[in-house]
Length: 238
Image (cartoon, rainbow, N blue to C red; front, side, top):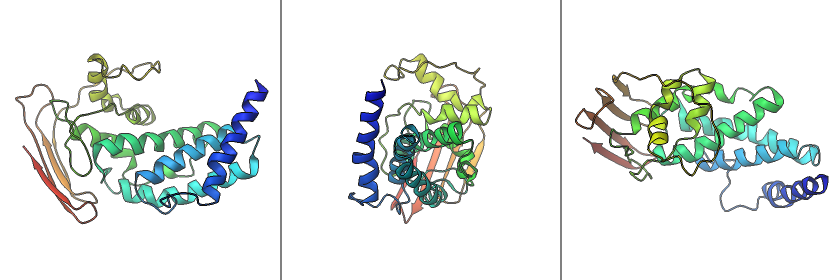
């Protein structure tokens, strides 16, 4: 009802927009170059677009600040190769809010102001393919647990770049019932098997990952995380 929409818009104004404007935070997410920037900006932009008619001035402010502050974070987190310095677990978290923001901007305004063109961003879903082993465990460098989770953002990348092979791991999780907590209905694109190849990535978040094939546990999976001063961790997995 109109009354419910007004009540929701007023709550967003009081508990989201005004908190951001008044700097009521324990971390300045506008200046952060990590997942916190993506999560906070993503939520605020979606809220701003949903309640724009009720709070046009505040919503406009939230959107403009997000567009300005999110670009540097994207460059740190994804450039130049799409590797994510905080590991696969936080990729699932931060990148989900990132693509929610991009999808909301594009569907309402017709543009994401070039955010999706940030170098490396278009490659980052491919990074996730290499970070999940044949035993469905993550290569758990940085602050990342070994247990894998659904990478919902991969669906956005597969659709945007017309590359259903990015859903290789997601379709396996669907078949195994690991998407049970995700209630959204989806039209699943046809999965195209990827052939394993040597994929050195030696810029930004530094590591090397080698996969020979993608079918059984006895087939090879090799990865090495080189020391990164920002993350402060080096790791090998064989």
